[in-house]
Amino acid sequence: MRRAAHILYHGAAGVSGVLFLVALGFWIASFSSRYTLMVGQVTAYRMIAASRGEVIVSAMTFTGEISRFAEPTEHWIWKKSPPEDIPGIGTFPGSSAVAGFMFRRVALEGQTGFTVLLPIPFLVVLFAPLPLVDVMMIRRRRRRRVRAAAGLCIACGYDLRASPEKCPECGAVPGAQAARPGGAGGSAAWMLACITAIVFLAGCSTDSRPHEQDKGDTMIHTTLDPDWVARTITTTTQPWKASAVLIYSQDGTSAPLEARQAQYLFHTPPSTNPYADFSYDATVFVNPATGHVWAGRKVDCYIETATGIVGFWPGPGGDMRWYDSAIKEMKPKERLDGLVQRFEREKGYFKLHEDTMQGTDLNPFVEVDFFAPFPMSSAPPTFAKILEMNVINGQLFLRLESPTGEYHASVYIDIKTREVVRAFNEGKQVFPEPGT
Image (cartoon, rainbow, N blue to C red):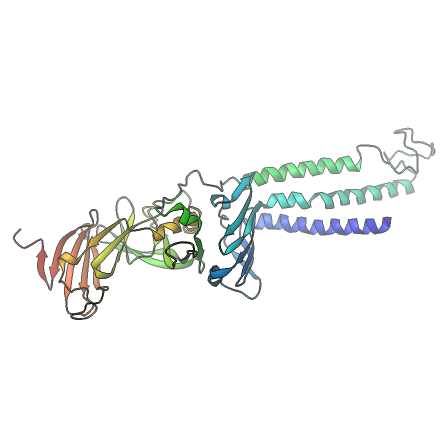
């Protein structure tokens, strides 16, 4: 029975030692790469990820309508990607954080589960004691056997050939099983305490970034009803992918910029009135020359002003929509992927559903049926075709063609006021009226 207990103990110590080495290896490697193990099914989602000294474990179960948004995979997927901060879950309702440990329980309509965030040094300390004590005990037993075979005191190593009955140095009796206090057990305890202290300090430095809300971050203002937001389930249908945009400056120049793009799906439960599901494309990019950032809807045109970047979308019926960015400027040493994480951490995706900051109505400056889908139509107006677009002297220039191809118009819109300053129909000036 005692032998079986020893075998069981050594086996547990061996497994713990392997886990200790794995945790230590991932702790070191997580600063150069992000490692993700995940599987997604129609009704469930599981993920384990490690990056920058942290590990996140997430398990979600989907029911009802929300299950159709899942992207199923047949097998577990292992991915290695550049390191990035794991978004803090402390910004979500139902989460709590203590000393770098975070826990979030999800209990929404159609979605239940949990997410746990741990510093990897905690796992290193968790698996270290058992193998360390086992190694110290094996070393101690070996030392005792060697000393006993050489006729030395098993406790202090004193030569007992002159006094075999009792050690004159420490008073130990040969054959006794107990060693002098402060021996191997005390050494193991001290060594374990030192390792724990070192790893704990390293873990604290790893978790130096605040998770619940960065001091430099301001939660993005949203005009959505808080109750509606709390009941809304938002997921990305695909990971952020690389793309490019063309940005215009007020001086008339333009330049292509690297960007990241994703699509967000909003699911509104049946209890919300009106019931609707909808999606928006989001784009994030930065102009490295100025530090200005766009993080918001994907639109047709981005214009950089002295205070930031604005975007516009030529809506149907001549109703031009202007949009503002959820994030204005990037932080020191922040990169494009870091902006994407901040956009998600600050819940910038809720701004995708907000009304526009301002609109420009083109109808007073074009023919009455300019936006009709076909001649003499009573159907709702539709989109005009943009033949040319540019920024000239702080004004947005648009050359438009009607959906039927019958009419052509050119408009100049002041970027600051968003008002039409000049308009031409078929090459003839109609605003301001000639001679005024």
